Image (cartoon, rainbow, N blue to C red):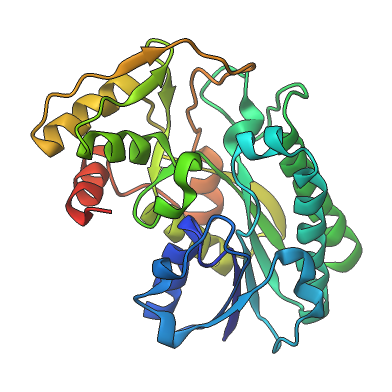
Length: 302
């Protein structure tokens, strides 16, 4: 089975690629390496084909027939779009290229969406609620979800949008300042530096381990769902202050954070996934607690 993973050298993509190789799948990775790294693929490098190019140019590649496409090669952090609003057009163009390829191949698409579209909405967040317009990144993802329905209605292209909550885990170093808070806190604390928190640290996130995210993506690719979008989280919220406590415990340290004024407009105070839909459609349930996940990344020393 030929499988394409865009963004396959990135954080989530490389973890997914590793799992696909373990399952004996024939994987092609397309990545522009803007937030990815070849080092993320060192465990499977000899078993996958890697093409260095952005998703916007995917139709120009000579690729074999693909049965499934995981489209994760999309700029994945709101600050990226604030710094460069033209990323909206690039992201949508890449999305269109992927869906044109899927149409040509009769392939199912599993693509990265976002929980950011719930900003300002009262948790728990369900798939049938949306915030008012507020953010380039989020509007691009909403447009993608709508375009997915267009491709399904016109051409029968099956797809599932994965509304990722706060994903953390191994292979995140290449994302740098765009990495998850858990990883950024850990990196600072390993160096004996106090982690920086905007606000008072009571803000909370639904932190989901990347291995659970990979499992959800695989389940989505095997499902018979025609076209939909689902939350991918844990259904549990954890404050930044609690995360610091967990990291201190795992590191055997006692480093206190530094609290800074929050300069971000439309800041998200709390995220919390309602998992009713993904449980019903895919049978997905999270398996890795935050405590366990933190212990794993501390041990991995990434």
